[in-house]
Image (cartoon, rainbow, N blue to C red; front, side, top):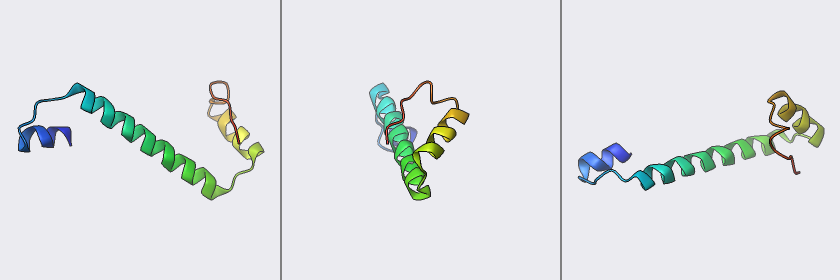
Length: 64
């Protein structure tokens, strides 16, 4: 999208715009993961097992 705007609208590259786009993409991905977890209706024990397999339990505190 950034390149498209640079070419079609003759806009200069904006580094902050790239960071904002990356942040929005990350937030969107996190919302998708959250919706999938809710749709699976996982129990807290299942979530703990899932995150411990992914080695994320040491990094993030799971709050349900």
